[in-house]
Image (cartoon, rainbow, N blue to C red):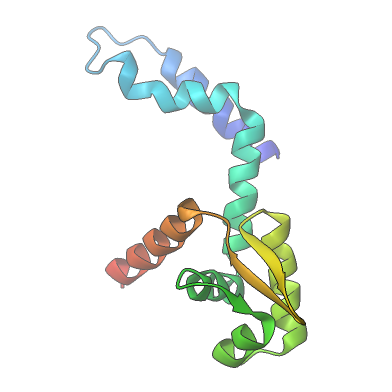
Length: 131
């Protein structure tokens, strides 16, 4: 919301400061222009990070990075109740991080694409490096 708008305003204002000798090219700041033009994309990305920010949901995403699972399999691995796993999956589906398909009586969940797996892997690797 307003925090992102303030950040974008700061980024735009600070990029307009004139320095006597540029030390970088316009290509170095391509992301600033992308962010400024696509506020909806920034909001969506923030939603993705918020949904991944809860340890139980991140754990589910990490498990799904290894392949499809049903709710009961996820509950067995995480040690959480079926209800808790279902609630977490609902949030992850809402952010379009996981998809589901019917398999007989079971619903199987998977990551929507490789980008999600990469985000999870990078976050976990970064956390381990920082410890």
